[in-house]
Structures are given as structure tokens and as C-alpha cells.
Image 1 (cartoon, rainbow, N blue to C red):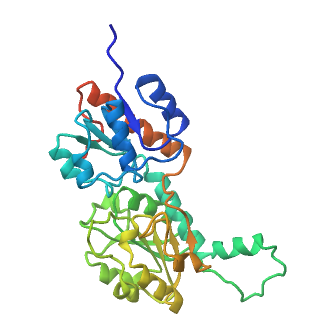
Image 2: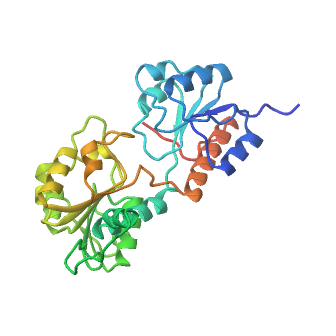
Length: 324
């Protein structure tokens, strides 16, 4: 008699190829019409006697929620690299394994970062708004001028997989690459980039600064008024990492004063309802936390999560385990 397919539940609808594999290889309820929150997922896990929970940031599992996970659940698989929404030590202490989806997001996050750099420097948000409003007149030679990207100095904070991928793309624009990281990379990984052990020493040299590091729960923002003040006047900030890395009040002050030329943002302190003052600034180029939002990457993320569920169900090691 064939063994029962692993039982799983998911907090969100996943790309078509992932849904097809769920239908074929797993026992699962239909995909939700809208993202499920924590309470709904916990209730569904109990009802379905789920072996695994596939979650995203829509379904944080922390504090009392971890204790409320039914005993049937053996794996929490987050369809993300980030773990901000999970209390990993508490989950592991309960004997629930955790996995995420590293590596498969690298190229798309780096691509988005370059889009944010280009769009912020070239005032894409304002140009798009102008055209949508009907254009109406040609611009003067000195009106609504952007900043050239080619040849500028790019500072990268966090030189992991995504930071290195951004650096490779930046070299195509003849940019000089500086980086700050917990450790100096070996020369093959640096590919000519210049290491700064002290971030404060790097900032005065950066025409463009891009953030690619995780945020620690409860830690103060990395980019404060002091840090913005160390950047050259007319520089650009790009953040496609975590909203908690930036003091948004300080960011607004730097933009309004003209100390920052512009910003390109994919993440915010309060998602999905960012600070209205940020939304009101016409020049900032903003996207709604979409670094991995391509068919290829979201499919790869979902498939990797399912590979982890299948591995654990077969008493094999997880493909991408998360440890304390």
C-alpha cells in the first residue's frame, strides 16, 4: 500500500509550477484566495494535521504563536531568505525544524538593486509621473536633471551573495566599488573592490550607497542622521534589504535638505503601509518589497521549499536547514 503523501499547508498562493507539484506530490488544502495570517495558519495546521507549514512574512511565528503550533508540525519552511518573522531558537527548541530559500534570490535581488540605483539617479519616478500626466511641454536644458551613474563610486554594505552580485553589475557601469562587511573577502571574491572595516570611513567616498545586510530584531537603525551626514552632499541611498536598517525620519530630513539627491527603496519600516511622508516625496523611486518577484525566482523558491518538505518526510537531511 503506498505511503501517504506529506501533509502541508501554505500561507499564500504560489506560482503555477509550485502549485502543480503540491497537487501531485503532497496532501494539501486548496491555495488560499488571500494570504493567511498566523491565527488562520495555526487553525489550519490543526485541522489538516499538517506535517509542514509553508510560510512567508504574512505569517509570523513568534512568542506564544510558536507554543501554539500543533505537535503534528515537524517543519516550518519559510519561502524567503529572511527570518525576521520567525523565532528560530523557539521553533528549534520545540523540535520543529526550519528551512529557508537562500541562493535562488541572488540574481533577481541584484537586478532590482540596479533598477533602484538607475531609477533614483535618473529621477525615473518624476519622469514617469510627468508622462502619465500628459507631458505638455518640453523641458528646459537645466530642468529636472538627474545624476549620471556611469563612473560613480558605489558603496555596498554587506558583501554577501547579493552584494557581490550587485558589484559585478556595477562594474558594467564602470563604477568604483567599495564595501563594508563583517570580514574582508578573499581577492577572488572582491574582484577589485576596496574593503573598509569601518563604515564611517567608507561613507564620505560613496556617491551611491546600497544596503545588503540583515536586520537584527531590536537593534537600532544602521543609517541614522549621523551616518547620512557622512555621505557626500548629493549622494543616493538604495535599500533593498530591510526597512529596519534606515531611520526614516533621518532619511526624510536628508532628502528634504538636499543632502541626499534621491533614494531608491524596496523596503520600509512599516510594511505594507509605509510612512506617508515618504510616499509624498515625488522624487523617491519606490517598489513594494519585490526583490524576488519574478516568475523564475518565486518558482525556484517554492520548489526549494517543497524539496525540503519531501526530504524531511523521507527522513533525509534538509536541503537548506536553518540552525540557531
